[in-house]
Length: 286
Image (cartoon, rainbow, N blue to C red; front, side):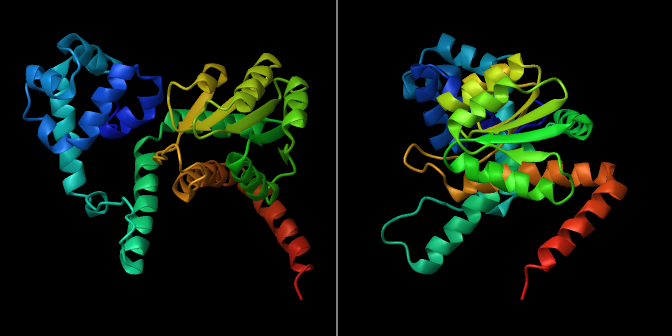
């Protein structure tokens, strides 16, 4: 599991679980402090999921069995104890005072960044940056709230290269994807990875020969099937929290990592371009 927090791993895989696996995952996430003391029989009884189902669940997490799962739980809990930001209840309640609410929002965003950092795959990041450097054009795609993140991605890269482009209209997105080629990179942002339009753009871009980078939360979402590289964001977003800032912050963090690594590897050219764009924008100031 490459030292990934087991609870973060459960969250990234959640959408791919069966109904009984989701019930088990919900129980584990709520009772995480007690799991390491339970036998597989006890967990089966309390979660209403059979022992064989628990064993398959562990295998789906990339673990050999229940004992290794308990060891991973213990390691993850130990990490949380050493990280005070993860011990604070971030569920916002109607009777929260303004200062308590502000603190919970802060911790939610910090937690999203921490989770995203823990999910980084440096080989994939390096591969993505190399492809972006080699590309003749970088096209950013997104729908709804993810489109705003895509626009921010273009905004960052446009300061150091003229290769960056964002496509806003969903019809134009698929038309553009259909005319991409092996010299182009498509960066597709979708929190769920289940948005029909984003999946279609990823499929068409891939079939057209483009290198596809997916930024999403779930490691087994449908969009991933068409991605050459997947970058996972760590924010947890409920079904009624679409477009939450914590999700956006984690996506922007990944774009920042790509941007700065690109800048570092193309320093002379990027530095010159940044100075040019800075002077152009400065003329707009009073």
